[in-house]
Image 1: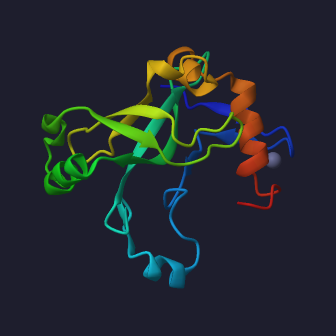
Image 2: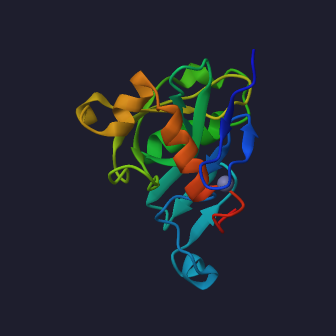
Length: 174
Ligand SMILES: [Zn+2]
């Protein structure tokens, strides 16, 4: 497979391979440690709870790149029902975790470059071999660009723009 390459629009650097953009926590997670303590929030690399009421897992939202055989992955959090969170936690680490089947989830991060993605309805599909679950925007949001991009792909120039704005060493956030 040819490695995917593109040119960063801001600095002209040739980038090889797809960047990963991920979030360490759901958007709802308190920023300040004292606040996290007050709200009884817990966070690991894959699981998060807030006040014993809200339950989140880390998932991967794949978007194919147009004109390429590769997919860009947003590392995002989705909120599950308590029951599904328990089923997911109990089977976490099982090499055949796909057996628990797809679950409903609420998208729990705000992606740059889209209309608001917080609280989009999704389907979360647990994977085997300790891979993070995949998340798909539900058809009820068929007018949302992220729904369309998961099916039709992201244009390469949009990926390059995203890279320049959020990942390039010159953007300041990298
Ligand atoms: Zn650049």
